[in-house]
Length: 78
Image (cartoon, rainbow, N blue to C red; front, side, top):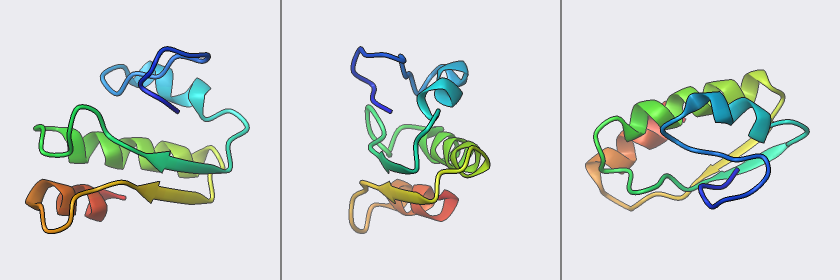
């Protein structure tokens, strides 16, 4: 999944775009835009991660910042 324009489209702010982006995907590299410090980012990462696992994704990798409080929250949600 990517926040860049593509097919299928993906938008962190529109969870209706998440499921189509996971079709046939076994691994996901998560890079939250604009930043994990944004309010609600950890919750979005958690919700996306749960959906990904439900859809059969067996590997999730989160790009985060070391020692950043909000990044740690997102890691816990993953």
